[in-house]
Length: 306
Image (cartoon, rainbow, N blue to C red):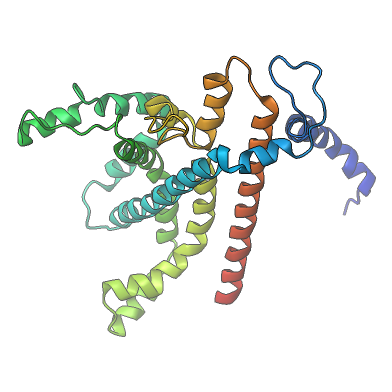
């Protein structure tokens, strides 16, 4: 058996640790430092500003923080719910041997997931077009020429539109995860429950679902974080709009879209880097806290089940 000293292991790991420190930790440290200054685009000699930038975001007159986080969390909750429902339904269908052409459907399932999100987003934006979009055109065939859903101009419909697109792009991931978990469930358990007189719903609720939770939980956490940081899809479709009020962000101005619009949008003439850095730090703290809490609750539920 070969024995290696700890100092030698550390030397082997040192290049990786230095790379992580330079690429990941140094931007975080600089952002944290910047958040305590008064740096702007034209303020080269900036000074320490204490907690001013953080208090700015909690000021009632500048309540963008609570509004943006609120609509982002709503977006995350709705998307995750549909990810689970659609992913579970398709996984159960693909796990049923009575369905014909299973290999074809399993390959077709990957199409939304494999297609670049930018292309998919632009296609959906065309589908949502009020005048020429196929969705409204089909509706006019059955409902009359006056029919038209303002997908991209009405706040509620715009929110629904970006939810639809995100679900279309993301549900295959949940389908693959749940399908893999379903195929690992022993058939003997379902057969035993069937002998005991349990119907299909009771077998699913009491036997199958508890065995799926360990696979679904990490997928849900990962997708929640990814959805919270959603930018490309939303920006390509709505750019964070539509705007409902002059003193509020747009109806789909989620966290990353809001930061981007702040930097290159309304304040592009004099970007307040320090305020944006403080906002980014607050989002980082919120995401870290939610992730830690979710992992803790997940570990507690596993111990309770054990």
